Amino acid sequence: MLRRRRAALGTLVALPLAACGVLPPADLKPPRLRFSDFRIAELGLNDIRFVLGVDTENPNDVDIPLRNVDFQLELLGQPFASGAVIDRAVTLPRSGTKTVPVEFTVPTARLLDVLRRARGGDLSSLGYRLKGSASWGYTGIPLEFDRQGNLEVLRGFADRLRPLLSPR
Image (cartoon, rainbow, N blue to C red):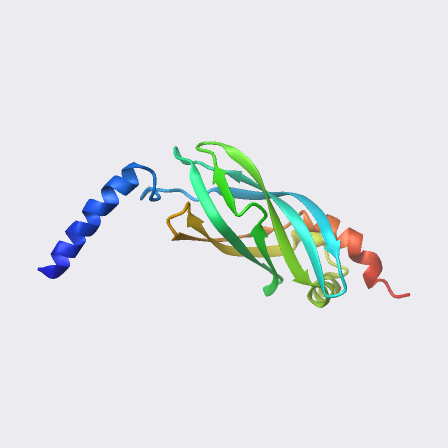
C-alpha cells in the first residue's frame, strides 16, 4: 500500500514538471552528431588540448537543455581523451541544428602512441567511440550517450603531428 502511495505521489509531482518542460519527454530521440571542425588549442609536453566542432541535429519538437556535458573518446579500442563542452550549459534548438565546440585533453604520450600504431594506415577510417553524459537542464537528471563511427576529421590532426613521428 505504501509503495502505491509513493508511486502515485511521484506521478503527481512528475506530471506538472514534465508539462512545464522541466523533465525530458518520455519519447525523446537522441540528437544526431557529426564532427565538423578541428583545431589544436595547445601543444604541451604533457598534454595536448584540441577542440572539435560537433554539429548537432535535434530531431525533437522540444529544446534540449543540457548542462555539464562530458565526453570520453576512444580510438583503436583504447581510451584516448576526455573532453567537455566549452560552455557548460547549451540548448539544442527544437527541430534545429547547432555547432557545439568540445575541448578534449589527451596525454601527449598517448597521442603519439596512437599515431605510431596508426602510421602507414589510412587515418581517415580510424574508428572512434564517444561516450558521455549530461544533465537535463538544472534538474540533474542524467542523460547518457554512446556513439561510434569513423573520425575523418582526425586526418588533419595526424597531418599536423606527423613531423613528430618522423625519424630524424
